[in-house]
Length: 404
Image (cartoon, rainbow, N blue to C red; front, side, top):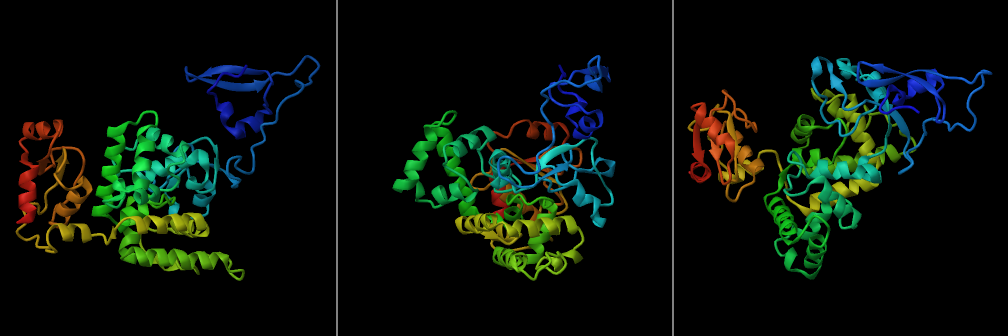
């Protein structure tokens, strides 16, 4: 038998050594750990085993029918070990090979067969897409682990990111018959209960009321090659969600035009090629996203279900529209938040201090930290800061400072 895992999982090795299911092989212990398939063992007469099963890789995904492609093992990386941004799932090696803007990219060794279709439309991969959308860098919904999301999807309660916002986004939704019915269904699911379901509903209403910035909205769509930095660049280019969605519509018409050659340069996204930090791979991903009517509709539904602000609008509203950093106590500081800030999500609080001149808002305390804001259940970060002699203020004091 073949011991697993072994490098026989690499299809190129399988082809090279003519190894199929049911064939006897010679195995060596490589690197003191991994079983390595050395060669195929033939019968005495030189014939191969009968009834072997072909390991020819499928050309289409068995789940959604999209074309398959050999991609990276894990996440594509930049040389010097820098992680490539926006790779929701291992992205396509051929894309990088033909992309001059990615000359500094390198693939990790080995190959893996992947579905090239959108994650959200491929049922086995949709869970990762939903978790990505609700993550802190995206919509920042609390209390939704992958296991809980899986339960919601298995029960057909959610299919797209907007579904929970439609159910609970409005402040009166839980009192409506529909909202109450959904809340009751969620509470009855394994691993949930009344408290956890109510917490998620409350988090949804908080995000819906406060809104998200355009960059976080774009990030939540899970477009390959569009990570946090690229999302911010796109947000700065389009300014508001209406312009971004209109461009998606224009791109959709472009790719569906029989006379179009699907050239990215001539598409509505072509002007972005002049933006430093947005390369051909990202532009191709945007164009591919616009081809999928279901994905474009899901993006529009999400935009209708919650407020989508301009990049600095949340911070502007939190400080009554002022942007005076000259006398700001946060000017030039690295500010770390720990625990809950009353009436404000951490993302919104970070946006406020950045608008007031803070240099950075990391999630960890270090010697470069200038200030720590301690809220309820602050944890060990505040103690670490005090040990390092870093100033710590209470969340209530923080709210008084920004309101003044």
